[in-house]
Structures are given as C-alpha cells and as structure tokens.
Image 1: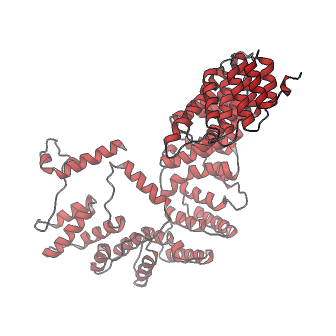
Image 2 (image 1 turned 90 degrees about the horizontal axis):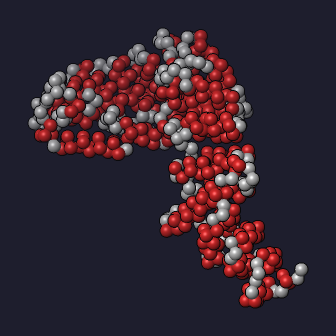
Image 3 (image 1 turned 120 degrees about the vertical axis):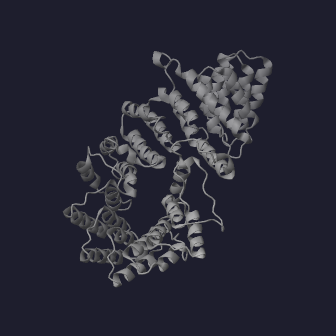
Length: 565
C-alpha cells in the first residue's frame, strides 16, 4: 500500500507540474511517462483526437472531446460513435482504474464483490444519447448498449432493448444473449419463471442459428444456483450439463464452481458431486476463461471441510491446485486466505500431529498466516493429542501473527499448559516448565499493557490464577509473588478467584522459598474470599517453623483448629 501511495503521488506531481515533464529523452518516446493532454473549450480537436482517447480508455477526456466536436460541428463518423458507445457502455462513464494501481483495484473489486448486486447503470447519460444518435440502428449498437446495461444491472431496460432489436429482426450475437441470461434473476422472481425465460432465450438463439458458448453455460448455471427448490435446481443443472456436453462446450472451473453451489447446499442433502468433478479434472491444467473461475478452489475446499468433512478429497483439491499454472486461478489474496483457512481447519481436525506440522511448516507464514479461529483449532488439536511440548513454538507464532489480543486464545493456551504438567524426569520435558513460565509471563504482561487501550484485555480470577500456577511450576518465584500481589491488591476488580489448587501450589512454593509472609498473605486472601483457609493453614503450619506473631495471625484468620494433629 505504501508503494501504491508513492505511485499515486508521483502521478499527481506529473499532472500538476506538467511543465517539468515536457522533454522526451527516450527513443522511441514512452507515452506513459508523458503528461496527459489537457483539453478546454478552445482546443483544436479532430476525429483522430477522439479515436486516440477512446483507444486509451480516457473516459472523461473522450466525453469532453465528443461534446466539443458536436458543439463545433466537427463530423463524427458512425464508426467513431460505435466505438464511443462501446467505451461508455463497458465502463459506465467511470474512469477505469490505471493498471499500475493494482492494490487499489483489488480492494475496490473485493468491496464491490461483497456488496449485493444492484443497479449501478447511469440512466440518461451520454451512452444512451450516443445510442439514440446512431441511425440507422445497427446490431452492434444494440449489442453494446444492451451488454452495458446488463453488466450494471439495468435489467428491465436491457431486456426491453433486446426485445426491440428482435422485433426489428436484427441479428444479435451470442455475447448479447449471454448478458440477458445473466440478468434473468432480476427479470423474474420464481424458479419456474426464470427457467422458462432461459428456455425461451435458448430457443431464440437456436432460431437465429447462434451456438451457445461457455458464457451461455455459466449464465444458465448461475441462474439455476439461485433456485430455492433444490430438486428443481439439481434437475435443471444436469439437463444443462448434458446438453452442453453434446454441443462440445468444455466446462471451465467457474462451471464446476456453479455445480458445487447448486448441489452442495448448507441446508440440502449431502452430495458427493465433488468426487465426480475431481475424477473428471484431476491432473488437468486450466486457463482463465470466466470471471468465476477463481471461485472454484476456495469453494471446493469449503465443500471438503464443511459439507463432507473429507481430508482425502481436500488433498486431491490441493493437488489439482498445484498442477501446472492452476495456482494462478486461486484468485486474489482474500480467496487464497479462505482456501487455506478451510484446508488447515480440516487438517487440524482429521490429521495426525505429524502430518499437520508437515503442512504447517511448508505453508506458514510464507504462503498463509492462520487467522485466530484457525489458531484456536490448532490449539485444540495440540490439546487433544497431548502435544503440549509444541506450545512455546505456537505461542511464538501467535505473537508474530498478532493474535495475542484474543482472550479465547490466551485462555486456551493457559489451560493447555496448566493441565499438562511437564515431567521433569523426562529429558525432553526438562526445559518445558521454564518455557511455559515465560509464555505465562508474556500473557500477564500483555494483559497489563492493554489496560490503557480502548480494546483492552481483562484478568479473570481463573486466568490470573493459571498464570500464577505456571510461574510457580517454572520456578519464577519473584514474578509469581508479583502476580499474587496484583491478585490481592485488585481482588475487588478481578471477577472470580484462583482455584484452591492454585493457592495451595503458591503456598508450597512459599515453603520451598522460605517465605512465610507470602504464605500468610495467601491465607488471608483465601479467608477474605470465602475459600478453604483451614487446609492452607494446616500446610503452612507443617511447612514452616512459625513464631508467635505468625501463629496469632493464623488464629485470627481460621481459629486454632489447624494446630490440632
């Protein structure tokens, strides 16, 4: 994004200070480095000027020059009007994003893709005026305006012009029919009405001897995918696929994407259609042929995870992704992230820890950074497999990936380390208590540091108790005392209390570290919070040689029953 901001700043300087860039040192000259022409009412414009602007897709300048030519009475040929109509219809009067601003273009397309499809065609603008000026009306003129309106979801007027062209017995091309098929969902409401209109359009294509193509197929499948009636959608899809197979139309990945969303519905019956799809296309290299081609891999992995929960199928999808240049069809980084989110979630639930780590090491972080939800699935897998020796490593990853502000991840991390006490007699686990203590201290510091922020983390009795226990087990007595002092000082602000077992471990550590004052402080905390103080008092009495002051304080807290053997 910083690089893109720099490119935009450079372009702004080039346009604002064009006098500094009038020299042409490169031979042949590089047009992209030269400032744009600036047009005004006094500019001398010709047909060649307009044609050059249309060729460069400079919408605003082309519109200005077109209107200026009309004002000055400069003749505009029918071919130029047709080119102008095609330009305006394709871009809907909006300046196209320059190719060098690919980051901004990605964000714009991604935002538009997440929004509901609505009419954005600019009614009554120059495109419609140019269309009205073209006489006699040609099939190419109708095709341009119809496709433009259909692209920007002015469905009713596009269909009206389509019917008008048919009434005039004009021969429209396949792409124009496809644009109407893509708008059937806006023209009709019920599945039956939509399907009848689709069949009528196909019949008209047959009468005009037009051969349906891949765009026709995918338009029909997109329409069918909107049918609420699962049985009807499945039947129509199979019928369409059969007919297009006879026509020799080869399916693209976008076609298979539509098949998946038609057959594998969240509330529909389980379908294994992806098995047939993978058997058909396994080992095949694809090229981009349709805008929806980049939706296939993320959707296929979603089906493997959520619809079938099948790891072997997910492996086949991933194998297909890496055939030839198929990875180019995974789509933008957002779709790539969705693909790997489903893949990792499925692997974490169905693979052995060794198999999962092999994939994790291969892809993280150079290809994919797990989201917090996936990292939680990984922690569950570690917990289930008892692979708690991996916790320091995955905590390090969570810090790098900035997941440490997720309370659910912190709690699960603490839970795993607390419930899996390392066996220090085993050589491979001798370093774990100290490593766990470092992780717990990290968590403690992160929560403390977040207190002044708008989105802060908050201690609970259980959380801070787990931290205390892990620090004690790791031999970090100094920090354990600091944490307990925080517990004692802020007990009115911290909801809940540490467990009885946590306080007992703290007392045991106080005995080892010969710190009776800390043990008595812990006893006082337990009594004030209505916890089991007597058991703690008995252990303190046995673990220390107490003076009269200590004994008197304990009696004031729990009575003298702890002195009885």
